[in-house]
Amino acid sequence: MSVIKSTREQIPMRIHGIVPALSRIAAVAGNTVREAGRNRIFYGVVAIAVLMLLFSMVLSDLALVDQKARLVQDFGLFMVPIICVLTAVIMGVVLLHKEIEKKTLYAILPKPIRRGEFLLGKFFGLCALLFGELVVLAVCWSAVLALRGGEMSPILMTALGLAYIEIVLVTAIATFFSALSSPILSGIMTLGLFICGRVSYVITDLMTATKGVFVDVAFMRWLGRALVALVPDLSTFNVADELLLGWTIPTDYVLSAAGYGLSYAAVFVIAGLLVFERRDLT
Amino acid sequence: MAILKVDNLSKTFRTGLLGRKVEAVRGVSFEVPAGSVLGYLGPNGSGKTTSIKCILGLIQPTAGRIELFGGRHDDPLARARVGYMPEHPYFYDYLKPTEVLDYVGRLYGIPRDIRNKRIPMLLERLDVAHAMDRTLRGFSKGMLQRVGLAQTLMSDPDLLIYDEPLSGLDPFGRKQVRDLLLELRAEGKTIFVTSHVLSDIEHLCDSVVILQKGVAVAQGPLDELLLPDKRESAATLVLPATDDDAREGAATQLASIEGTAVVKRKDDVLVLSLPTGKVEELTATAANCGARLVELAPQRDSLEELFVRKALDTDAAATSGATDQGSAA
Image (cartoon, each protein chain N blue to C red):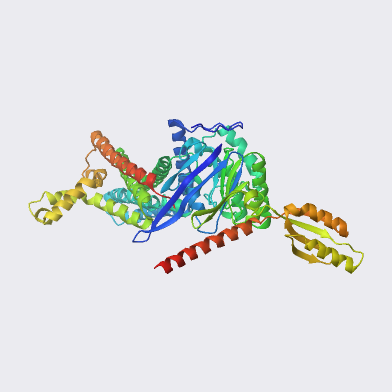
């Protein structure tokens, strides 16, 4: 069947190939970052996180003199990733829903962009935004640490790097559920997976114990095995205990943890793409 | 050759917990030839937007075939030659018009230098240039509509698909949009447009498809559809002003021509409906009795009349079908 050629002088367009596809993904990602950059709620979350870091300074006054920096360090190490994870959940679960509800998607998807490219653009845009948030909070944290006589050591930087892998993984989970269901359900599922992921090592311990429900009850044994097999072990990215004990974090561990986290993230994003490709946008 | 070809398109949704079937579009077929304007009409819920969503790949048809530019309708190369504006053109309200067009241009893979040239030109053409530094958040419906139209023209596409482009606009805004559509038509663009403002569509379209409850109840070139009886003409005559008897005599003589009906009579003006074959007899009679023929036009429905007639026909058919079934039972 012949394809009609336009008789007019065409505007040059680059549609096929890797580079144009990457360019479209970058355009969507850039727009996602810009959206958050003009969103007061995002700034509100960052402001609250900064205030909490400042509050840790007040808390540290209650600690012994040689423990002040330690308290600020532990507080920051817990709070900075958690705030970023919560931002990932809040923004991730509405990633597509907002586009559908506000009908902005209907003007974009009929353009020569594949659905997968659009979803990847949203995902990478959110990851870039969360990286920016993590950097801002890390800078504030290091300032507070410096005021209390501590410093942003390389091991703390490594801990933040691992925390970012966890944030990317949670963003991928939120993106998957966003492509699948409503924001409330997506939020519950993403937070549920996050909590399960954070405590999955406990389930592993319970399953290897000599007795207990995860050993004695067949259904719980099966459930425990399923959880451990399917849910990513997010404790992999938490090195607070190593920091507390003053241990170093081997490069091999960091690389394998990054590979583990990014592989899981890729699985969730690909699953999200498959769901989104088939979804009717009514 | 057809730029857009839809063959036997059907779309069924499942709603509710029990998955009740709703047939939004049933076996619709039509073609949009290059350079023509097709009006896709129907009341709310008749399946217009569902059809457009199928054409653009936003939803998957349950059955049927859609071709764009002779190829697959979901091919990005085909979609690169389509400009689409949804019924409610919501764009990212945190963006400025220039940013919207730049974003759209990037999605089309248009090089930056060409984007930079086209954006001010399009904003100027659509009369939005004065607001290019404001975000869309504060834009009126009419302004948003114009940004929506501008983004459809970013890639200078061959096919434009507009879903209710005149909806919600004030008379001035409607005129502006209508004028733009006429300009685009004059430029040779192929346009697929839905609208409730039938009088505007009537002047714009070459052909129409009328949907009722998901079924195409009428379709074809507008001139053919609006001439339900091509044999009928309307004649306007001025009767002789000499005296009342002469005037009444002339009126009686003219009205007595076989097949003629008086449509309107006011003082010395007489409007008759008559078979087109009787025009010569009318001219001769008018000359004999001193009346003057001032206008002769073939009779035609307005698009609105056609639309209402088809809607009523479909309702009547549905009622009669239901009654028949009831009687049979």
